[in-house]
Length: 351
Image 1 (spheres, rainbow, N blue to C red):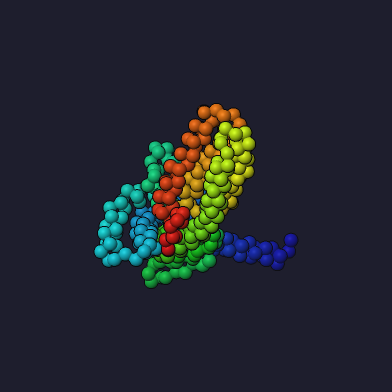
Image 2: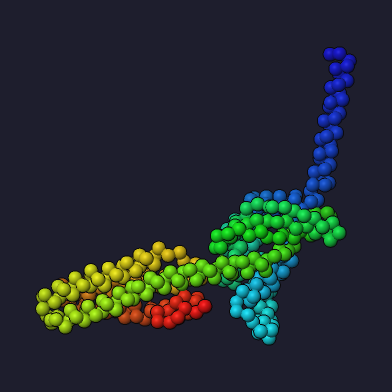
């Protein structure tokens, strides 16, 4: 190897070494002290369920303290306008609940980091109903990370804002969170606030209300149409009874055909149409109750039709029991419908 070539190789190695040293210096002394690096570590901690790293780059206590206030204010603003006095009273009440709810919420977040699931309880069973309710209201459980649009630093303030795009499943829409990082004394960056969490709560509440109204309108049309069918069916039933006695085989055959072909069939069709409706979370209990009422009316019609054949007292008693239970649940249905703003038969839908 010639002396000239050897010198070129030495020079190349020296350049590569300097580049490696420079890259290492930049990575450990510059890049690791940026919000971008903090974002990377947070994502890594969630992927690897690393609670220690997550806590290093997310100040959960500060974040939850501010987020709780924003969420409660957003929920109040999303409802009917409150007077200053009423808002002050509600605000005082929510502040009384703040400490225990934040504790429950923090446990839920830590459990999510550790397991990747919001639904699991911690080993001591400490994640209770409070945390579940707060999580449901916040909409965080149904949100998925999409990407980071941008990161902007404010050197004078020692803060940075990351535009984090998420997809909110309930709203079926994207939302960009303004996640604030604050520079620490050692040069690292920690998440301390979501600047527009109040706006996120309003966005989610508006979407939930729209879905509830859609559910209300759709089910109102289904229920009204089938209730009209029932009015006609009752007239037909009375007409059949008036034509002959129950002891008549012809009358019992006609009633059996009516119960199976008209009453039972209509309730089955009502149930099928209700099952095809998209049900928002707030209406799940009401919707299940409506389906149960359909099942009871179907059972009543089937039992009454069976009685027309076997003539057993036990058969008609069981059918009447099903009908009585259905009537009882219909009163509960009206109560739940009013609570969630869904229509009640015979009443105007509240706006």
